[in-house]
Length: 554
Image 1: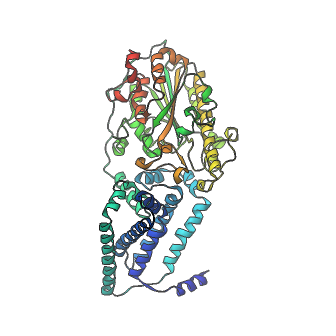
Image 2: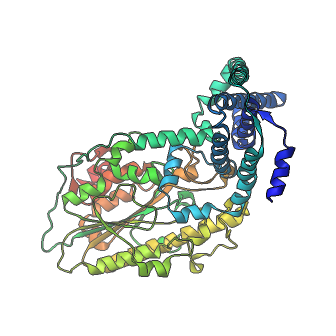
Image 3: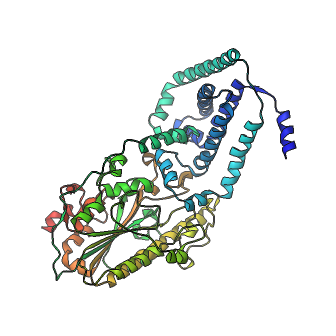
């Protein structure tokens, strides 16, 4: 093998450093950005020869752009290391943009940083490995083998200057002569730049880590005046609210919302269930939606930095007198549960319900909830708010999110390389995850309904939705402004026990009247606190669903 590589090295022509930089620029610009060029083509509105001329202009401009900064960065001791890093970053991220339609945004970098090993393993598919072999490994081998001539400093500077000047002139001429076309696309569709590899991963990583290393702020107390309106009496039953935060479930796949397949066979049979059909998420990824929905900020106002060092919904409920507990089967609470009781799933449960890939079925949440409720002393009158964070419909291995008993739709896609699957098999796999979530939610309702120590309720909503190949887009995390409805239109439902209904019938009738109203995760914070009988000046009355029925409640 070593002899073969030496022969290949000897057969390759020597190139100047400036020419080497141009070769790398051509590879980065033209080989890795098919998805970007497709979007440029579709957004231009051009047809016929004008369409191809415009694509050529964009392609040449991108080559010139990369050549400019490579001529500045790459010198004798940096040329090959920098080129290898760029090929590695560009090649790996280009797989997700070209094959899955993913935008490499700061939020996606956050998802990568905060993901766990099990999620990472599921992305290591055969198509990904083959892609990396052709688009990462082989180009890196080429860079290692090619011989670069390093001229004297004066000649080197002269060559670089010529390449830089030519690239700059080309950029200047092409951009200025097509200024309106460039501005129409890149100003109106700013996020399209997140499809350009490796520029997308470099700029998005810088933005994410720059934000991460901003000055640490002290914790901001929020909702200091929170208190329960109705003190707990010896005769009344305390409240138990189970808030289930779903994962990657989309509203259009719920038969409760009119989907033609019966994906909610159990929930559809439950009395007192209130289904909300028009609800949108705060983000398209867990790292955004979860802290946002608990922050008390709206999607438009949401400031991730402030949310990271300010108390939220769970802190306020705890201050008002609730025992707040978080049980997680996903990738963590993203800071929302840092100051409340966290229950770790036992090793015995993990052994029983976790798969070989490290992911656990959501049965672990159900059993953990049942065990926690059973451990509460009967004389304990403390009201409870319990948050269950689902694994839900997290891709790409949808086939591992359910069991045989809850997989009515066959055949399924049994691979993480979902873009290679037959479309119907992929839909079958995803729909089975919704059937399994239907099972989990119905079992939770039955469990808390049997516990007569409390007046009980359940609130379920997903953190975001999921794409399953619509318009060539898979999974989630697309920039919100460009995200399809599959990623932002989420399911949300509530259930109340008869004991709760007896005490708060007007509340429930109000909620029923809003089932088809346009709502969002913005409504969670004020409405949940109101349902828990908590009063605070930080509750936005306009977003409180119950306030919209004030005449009924009065």
